[in-house]
Amino acid sequence: MKVNRWLTRVGIVFLLFGTMLIIGCSVSDEEALELGYETYMDLIQQEPNETNMEEEGVSLYLPNHLAVSESSPFNMLIEDQQGDQVYLLFHDPAEPKTSSFHLERERELEEDAIIFEVVETDDYLSFLVIKDNADVVDEVDGNVQEIESDEESQQAEELFVLVSIGGVKVSALSTYEELVEDIELMTKMIHSYQLIDVEESS
Image 1 (cartoon, rainbow, N blue to C red):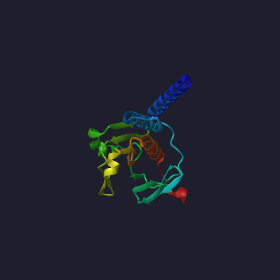
Image 2 (image 1 turned 180 degrees about the horizontal axis):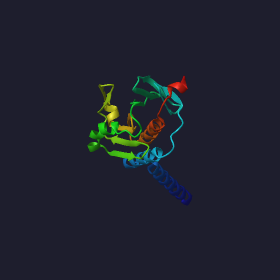
Image 3 (image 1 turned 60 degrees about the horizontal axis):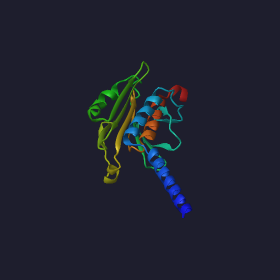
Image 4 (image 1 turned 90 degrees about the horizontal axis):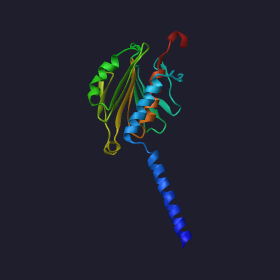
């Protein structure tokens, strides 16, 4: 009888401990935002990754599970192998890394943004936008394309995320669960962006 009570108490203790571990491992929305911000700030101040992809006169770093699915002289559609995440990259080769071109155009997002962080150094002008709104318009080649979420994705609390350095920016729809990973990938992409020297590549 005493043994059974002891085993029951031990079982309850382990159950409570396991529940605490699960709760402790989950990240709140606020923590996801903070971790995403810290990831951006850390990566933007590091040396960029070596480029491993060339497309439309530019080179940049892409992780192995990402690939360019469509491209034009100023745009790239980048998708993962599963096809469940898409990144839209826009670049203007005429704009240097210190350009405020994209920053001035995206200032309208600042008022409603959860995070609108600008980092300016002698070498570059960069900014991060996180907005709690899936219905955001992004201008591409003079055409306005609307990024919309369906009912299911709206329930997942989609976030509009944009990372930019000078004349290059990349945007995507993310969730609090995927936010840190998306910001990491996006920051690495644009931080590595380089124009290809036509004479050297020929």
